[in-house]
Image (cartoon, rainbow, N blue to C red; front, side, top):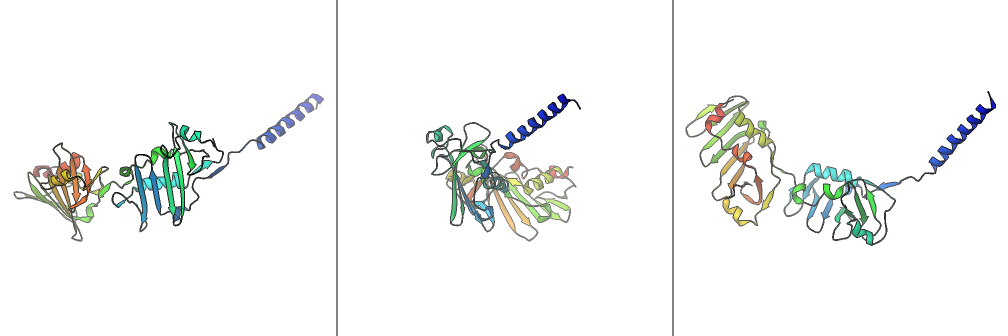
Length: 304
């Protein structure tokens, strides 16, 4: 082999060796856990900002929104929160330690989004901020060191109670239902199930509902997942008065003989609200399509 080739080979080895040496000395971004509490030990979560607040508690193994009334939390939201926050990570390289940075990153007490977690006697309090980026900044409460996290916690987990409540108000599978009775302003009818056969009956009609009837399927469909994302409480007396003459009342009896009553009221502005089992503490706002399914004419149940 010629001497020039030996020289080139030696230079190549030197360059490769230098590359790996320099690469090994390159600063490495260290990651750490965002939260140091064990996920299975957390039993209370508080999230708030200057305008809104939500509190969740673990009640008999079920996460529930604690205020203004106890209500099951949205499972998807809770699972995402644990994945993004409780099990989240961040780069341990701080961006700033100056108090003036708190305003710039929206991390002061007034503008930040607070997250406080409880695990028995242990607790952690973090403050998150976002100034328009796809990621968040955060600090530990009482500290001025600012860090960056790859998640967007401020927007995804805003302390809006409606977003945290389980929106499902009523849930029945078809095989769980024995009877559906509806009384509205034009008629009163009963749908009764015997195995796979449904029968319709009112004051003037009685017939077997044809298989795959569209009107019946619409009722069964909504009862499987009857949702409402807007809730009202009994501190609205004008809403409570609407239920004195309801727009529609539905009784659902299951195969065990237990009946649930759904009272639906209409406001002068054509808004619809539902009360369950005459309990005024929680009112559910409905869209008209949900109400319309229970007020159909008899001939609709005769069609395919």
